[in-house]
Length: 431
Picture (spheres, rainbow, N blue to C red):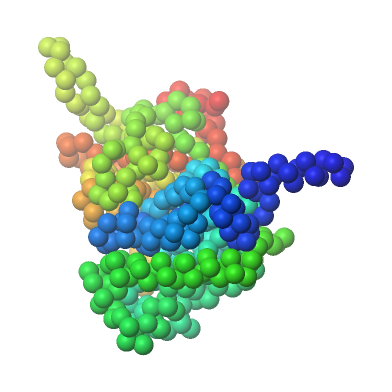
């Protein structure tokens, strides 16, 4: 047994997987090893409004500091940022966009996009699962980043920033380090070193180069703190916000069998409104429901005609279900049914509940191709199978309309997705 343990430790050390240690990262970098660094987040990680996100974003500045601090190391830097997304989608991106790179260090965003002034247990559970899996499965140290928007710094109301408090508390549990850009920005503005306008010269959401330099300063200080104190990240035995997102599945719809009438498999578009929303970077393929189909007339000319589109039906098992795909300027609304019941979403102020999802909610505002993400249902019973039906809503107009989806994403319980059991050949068949 002792010999086997020694062999395991030797192999783990050779693969850089002994522990999620900042000190070990420092040692390996000084020794000139090959190291992977992943920047995981949303548009503030990508660097929206930076003059050149590849050079003046916070991640580019941190990457340059790592190269300067460790000139003998061989770094690979990986951008895993999609603007306008939060930690719930991140749960289902973690394997593909982070862990497959075998990270040796991860900088983790999402505090701003999860809403810094709220602390709902659902998103906190999703965010915590990222910490748990990066540390426990990826064996990588984590720098948690608490980014902000301009109005957060103007208000400087730290008591109201419930998610900041919650994320800092999770840092203590998981023994990570924290790059708190909110505190740093408030401090520098109060000291007269910089103004809010200089940090956010264009809008109060995305900073300019001065702001990204501040973000980089906060991130680098947190990294240096981890190295100086030889911090070793460690996952607790029990998760603080529950284990719903500890088990998860992201299943491509195209792998589930025959598609219903009106649906086809395609590749993601190769153009987008924003580079961080170029979905060919983030999706493997798509299934597309369209109200029109290409045909060839008697004279051999190509034209399109209207076609019937059936509901997409899938079965799953889990506490929550989310759809991930692409939105375009031709995208439509759709209805979702769980176990035969129309999904309704409550609205504040006693307004009528919303009974539809809009796959163009982002792309219409951006006037270009973007992501589409929709949380369909939460708080489901995880001990039984559920059915999910997707019904595209096409207008009577003649122009082409579509719905583009890649994945059914399920978390909690067994977290399984499988074809809807049916004897109808036009519906998804059993494998």
